[in-house]
Length: 328
Image (cartoon, rainbow, N blue to C red; front, top):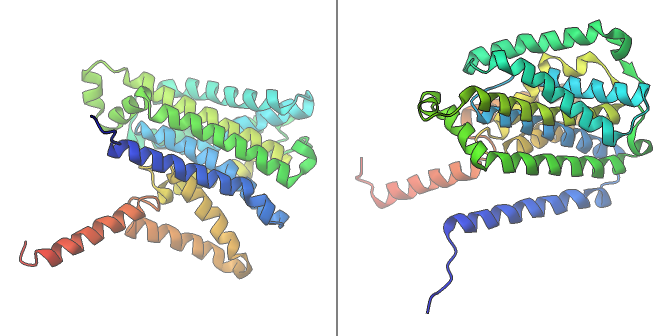
């Protein structure tokens, strides 16, 4: 007689799924217990930023760190906003259109960037980001220039709760697709390229092609985030997509933990929601934000998501020292 056994990997996977399912239930139930429209507004912004941060991390999986992510987000936002305002198209057309246009621009830019690595890719992406924002100014007739794009029709008559459930669905969809891509053969290939591009090239992997793919998919979903933001804010200005916004996305990923899929989710939630809880302190909020970043960078190199494993490792070492005090 054989006995059914569950492998450790299978058990970990079930635990992870259960945790994500529990988190989703909490998120869906939140509006039933939170009556503050302002808090729901903050949650909506958090959901949009989670999509943007998660898409940036997907690009980072291939060993690239983009400093133009907010500029790419602006492409999706302005595309959706212009189509909605001037052509009267609905979100089921404008949001995919914004995402696809963003991905198309990313592919065009990706060809000259594909062979650059690490800091060089980041520096050149920054210049491209500045160029994208400059183009928005040139197209002032459509984008509104410095005055911004005003009059984008809101979703669900501006209902915060209805928007909350819409963005929850959009975020879950985006995360599921990004998760599937990261943990399939394509994702494994991207990680191998990040670890050693020379080894990847030696076994016949099209390194440039995969890097362009990672950039395209990451920008596709930041385009989704941008299009959603356009509808939610109803007003678009260039200041919302400047270099600081790109840095914020990167900070969300690093604080949460760039090595874990849940890193951007945790990092974004902590760095957006926690400062809001201390909003009464007003002038101290930037210091709270900076304090969290410094604490994570110097004390938790694996990010907030890696904290449990870091604690477990420390406890294990302490126990080993107590059990073998004479060990070197």
